[in-house]
Length: 219
Image (cartoon, rainbow, N blue to C red; front, side):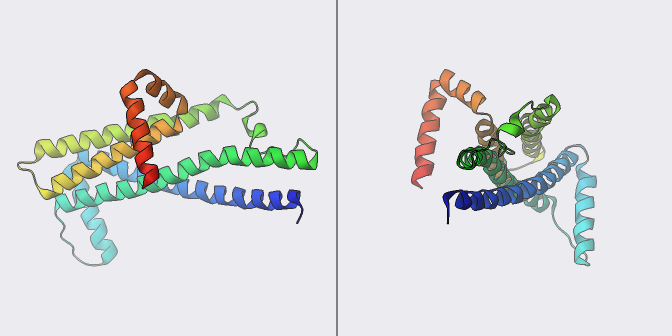
């Protein structure tokens, strides 16, 4: 098999995997947004929210089901953690693949002696519309911050209304911390300029970043 043919087959397979990841990312974003919206609903109308989800579960199972509010809350936190992990994985995968596809396109263009093979790289970035930049900022800045604010307020309210420290409250807090950490690391990874600025100006965070990366690579 010639090098050009081999690269082109690899490019097609990589492009297909990237499109599949985009589809999963979009689906998970909708689910994550729905869960966060429900969490926000819990903030303003907790009784109605619990009643709504209990009746929905009972209807789906075709049986009367009695779940405590604390169990429902913990299940929602678990779902948010799981969906956020899947969303972040696919989002970062897609972003990294753009660079790789661009590299493949340049190599294929070089071997085929043509400069038209640049759909995902130079052609995509050329004269990039400002409205798409704004949409990009919406997904990569506004939504992560918005989700983080909702989660922090929700866990704070759980602590305020709780008369005692329970296992469910501790679980919710741990899950919320996990969500915030994932959200924060995702935000920094998706914005290398902001990440670089923070690490260059706050030495303790730079050291912590290096230590965390070494630990994670060794696991």
